[in-house]
Image (cartoon, rainbow, N blue to C red; front, side, top):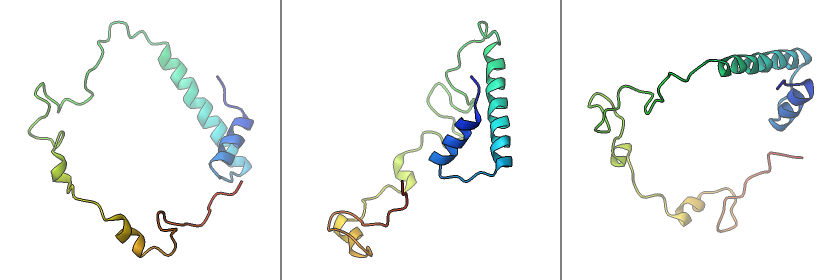
Amino acid sequence: MKVTEQDVKYVASLAQLQLTEDEQRRMLRDLNSILEYVDRLKQLDTSNVPPMAQVSDRVTAHGRDSRSEIGREDVLFGLRKSLPHEEALANAPESDGSFFIVPKVIER
């Protein structure tokens, strides 16, 4: 698979990006370079490489390593009740009584 100029222009348009001709050329070169590298990786023989269950050695068979913060309880993240709906809308510049009204930012 190879990325074309049209592909770069299309994705830039979807992302609302205005790329210069030089930026388009660099993007085309970089994306194709990445795809070439992935193709090279696909050619590697990984048949003798065991599958990994975890990518970090800090997780133990018991679920977490005492040195890490993996697996903390939600309460440690400051879990609390959310703001009541009416109170959240009370200070909104505009609402319809149920939702915030915001200006349209994407035009197509």
